[in-house]
Image (tube, rainbow, N blue to C red; front, side, top):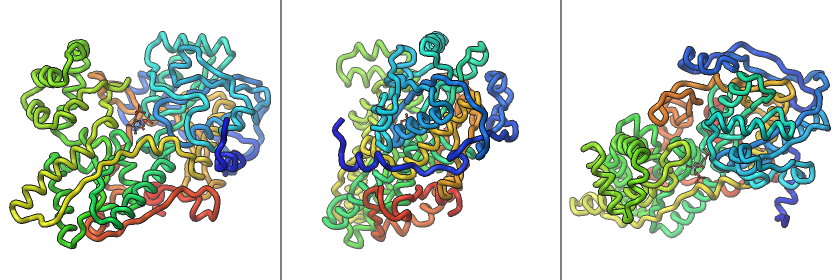
Length: 548
Ligand code: FBP
């Protein structure tokens, strides 16, 4: 492996850890738990894993543990810090018993079913410490949902003497981890399943999971890029930059980047939905900011757009939901049609009058993108919809009309950008390196204690790392019933941006000022070595959420 100078230096970085994980560890049981909603239904579906207590770890004498083999899976989109979860898990398991072995299933959950694996040895793990990416074992989006897959996975694990699995994933993967834990417990198979909260989107969080890993680093990378673009905009003074940011449905990434960089406009999907805004309302707002800034001679600016925006505009949401159902039932017929024009006509025919009207009013390129294949969870792949270009075209058209009416006297040139993949495999910030290593160690302790159906949890994250609180949260505690593919399912509740919470309020209190006056912040690149106030910053989201 050829390594960069930074990678070599980072290999020697020792992640900071909570005190409770530093020596021997004992587990303390808290109160019994309930799911966040729909308690009776969820208890019925998870009779063996429902109601378990929250766990926390404290320094203390631990009993000797017999040697065991553990499997680990990386599931879904990459997020900075995944390799540190694995190194924390590896070190934690070795601390429990040096004979313990760790196997990595390759290419995501599919590797478990297809029996693709490698043993994760000390030499291998050492090369990946504090590095970005998931390439040590790869990731994938295969969904574990069929009994046949559970059985095949169990047989493959048995052949390797694996008695515990760690699934590192987002809300859907952790929901599946819990289904798996329940299934194995029900059939008394000797197989523990532990989840770890991963996703750059930041939408897997609740009272016990303060943030998912990767969100910190990804937002810092995007904020650096946005800051650079803003400096360019403020130097050349001739472009409006429309920047779409990953994050799937949730706008946490957009909001965090706004708090870090103070752009002129940030659209928050959750607010658009709450105010029942139409696409035209959003366009009018942006066009008015462009016109206002032009009055001051500022024909430049930045607009942040969450990638899930179209799903939150009520009429578009209805259209997408109809398209999801319609495409699920007519996939073959649509695929047989050769041209996009034929596909659009076929699809339009089958929509309700209201949705058809919206669909045919969209530029062909966007209508085509809305018809693309769904992901394995049945979601429209919002990262493929070029909302940034759509918005530029529509704002341009609006400004043309405003010019005719004498309401806009400036110039408008839009530049589209999409930031997502640029941040998902970045070298983890110190925060993510520390947090992920602690999550990995925590997962190993939960395994050592014989637990299943738990998610590793490390809390109190705005305090210094030695004061972090490590433990386990029953996954069922985070569940509610939601409609998925036309059926009610027990799933981990997705955390969208809450408009009453401090991070959004902070943005809302400042947005008018940021819109008109140029108050850009240029955060610069992530710093790995240097003073703690530069290197160990948490996200602003965490800081404001915790009243700091
Ligand atoms: P996860 O939810 O699996 O963590 O993935 C997050 C994400 O990066 C989203 O922000 C984005 O919409 C999606 O993955 C892109 O998926 P893909 O990697 O399949 O292109």
